[in-house]
Amino acid sequence: MTACIVGWAHTPFGKLDVETVESLIVRVANEALEHAGIGAEDVDEVVLGHFNGGFSPQDFTASLVFQASDEFRFKPATRVENACATGSAAVHQAIKTIEARRARTVLVVGVEQMTRTPGPEIGNILLKCSYVPEDGETPAGFAGVFGKIAGQYFQRYGDQSDALALIAAKNHRNGVDNPYAQMRKDLGFEFCRAESEKNPFVAGPLKRTDCSLVSDGAAALVLTDTETALRMRRAVAFRATAHAQDFLPMSKRDIVQFEGCTQAWRRALDQAGIQLSDLSFVETHDCFTIAELIEYEAMGLTPPGQGAIAVKEGWTNRDGRLPVNPSGGLKAKGHPIGATGVSMHALSAMQLCEEAGGMQVTAPKLGGIFNMGGAAVANYVSVLERIK
Image 1: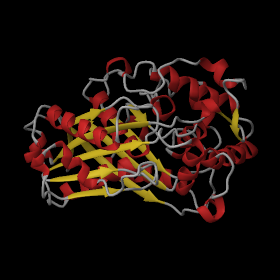
Image 2: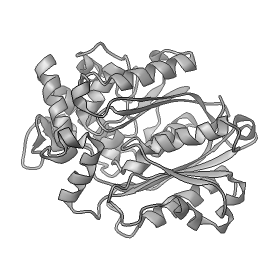
Image 3: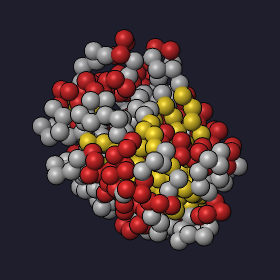
Image 4: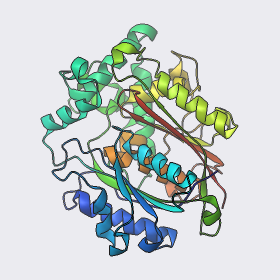
C-alpha cells in the first residue's frame, strides 16, 4: 500500500448552468484540501482529469487548478485523458508519482462540462471515443456503439431486456439516496422495461433508461503516501491498482466479452491477494446497462452469458452478496466524463469511512472500482481499504 486517499470533494452532477469548467475545478480543489485538513502549500503535484474533446472552448486546463490558490504556482501540474476512464487515469497517475517518491501529497481533480454543447455535437464528440474509421458514422452516437454491443450479446445469449431493466431500476433506486446524483428518482422496473413515449428506444435494444446522462460536474481527491496518511484524519489505502488497455477497433476483439476488464480485475485481485467475494461493494462503469451486465461476467461474478442471474437474484442489490453501484452508478448519478473516475473513488472512500449517508452499505471492508474508457478499451480497477 503506497498511496492513500485522505480527503475528497464532490459537486452535484447535472445541468450546472451557473458553473464553468474553471469554477468547478476551483470549488472541488478547495473543498478537498479543506476536507483533508491541508493547504495548497502542502501539495507537491496536481493531476487534472479532463476529457474535453470539444465540450469546452478552454483547452490546456491543468493550470486552472492554480486558480484555487496562488500557493500552487510553480508546482508540477498535468492534464491526463483516457476517454471515459480519464478520472481513473488521473488517480493512477498520482499513485505512480507517489510510488516513485517524486511526491508525498498529490491533488487529483476530475471535471467535465457537457450540457452547454448542442445534442448533435455531443454525439459527435463522444464518437471520438470509438475507432473513428469503423464507427465514426454510427447513428445515435456512442449509444449506437453500445446498441451494437447489446444486439450482439442478445444474438449470442438471448433477449436480456428484463436484466437491463432490472439494472436500470436498481441503479435509479440507489440514486435516490445519493445527494450528488443527477436523477434522484426511483423509476421502477416496469417503467424501465416498457417502451413508451418517455422511454423510447435509442439504439438497438437500448432504451432511454439504459443510457447514462449528459452531465456537468467535478470531484477531487487528496492522495498521500501511507506514512503521511496515518498522521491525518482518515486514510483509505489503495490495496491494488491495475490498468489494461485493449485494441481500439471493436473488429479486433470479441466485443461482448470485455476482455480488458477481465484482465484488469484479475491483476488487481491478484495484487491485493483477495477474491472477488472478499469485496464489500463495487462501483462499476454502467455508461449503458449492457455494460454493467457484461461487467458482471468480466469481473468473474458469473460465467459468460449468465450475468442476468446476478441482478435477477438480487446479488447486486445494496443488501445483496455483492452490492454493485450503491451510488446509483453513472445511470442515476450522471457521467461528466473527466469527473467520473474521480467520483467513483471519492464515493468508495465515503463508503469505507462509513460517511455515505443513505447510500451506505453495511460494515464495508474492501471496495472495488471499475472505470472504463471507450468500449472496454481503457480498463482501470482499484481496490480500496480503510486503514484509519
